[in-house]
Image (cartoon, rainbow over all chains, first blue to last red; front, side, top):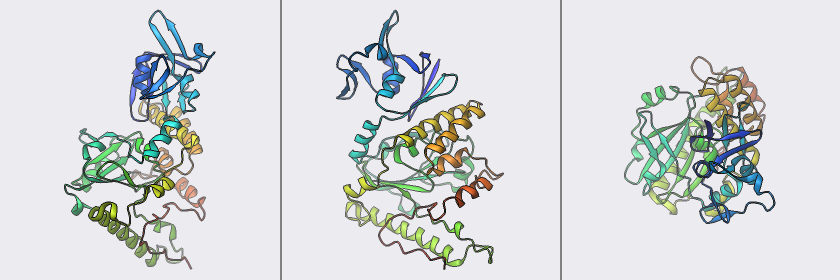
Length: 140
Length: 222
């Protein structure tokens, strides 16, 4: 199994890592990034990024077990950050800069879900309808 | 802040704390009435551009940012130790109290007056103050999360490499540096390496003062 650390989550996927490449299923691409492979390209909601012409084989391949997508190549193509440990068993990905710019421009606070000390999950959106002072602190 | 908690307002405190067990004693001691969450991967630092604690973000009833990440009324009085006195002079400890009170009053004003509060920033001002999209900072957070995962899985050396790279990429982040730094027995990253990094700031702030209406000017060091 390969572990993918997203900005908000940790997911386990059945992936093939070859050097700088990370091949995952279309379903796992969506789980890890939100992007879906469609005929028009890689789509996040209404916005689609076409697979660059002539470079299809670097991004998508069909095998006996269905379609695989090179998440690492796609992510670098979006100029989004990606890093792996030296065993290439754990990959960490960040938010693509265009997605972040669009998100910042809305002035909406990004939703999050985090546990309290008892393990109960709280989302920012649970508190919609109230003003919130989000206060970050730390023990260190 | 407790007195402000009601149907219209809440504090959500979030501990940026990777180490299991580290924030819990503080939470027990404070026994707060508002939710206190634990963010082991510092995901909110990445999402909201938090570089140090305490940091506050004001969010309105619709989930829109009213004030982006800023120092939550903390003053770096500890940087003004008078070597002759062997302590922080009173004018600085007093200023720390004043700053904290001014910040609390600003929050109360916003809770009472909402968008009409002088402290609710315009869309343009919020955009100006939001952290810029910076590839180095993005990569720093990616490497920090990787390091945190490796650390949690017993791979301290591999983790250290990622943390060091993260701090190089995002040198302004005290959160990344202090989380990864060696701690004293009390769990606080305040050893010689911290003092050294602090001294390297020179005239730059450890806590950039929140740009908030009515904040008095800091004492001069004379």
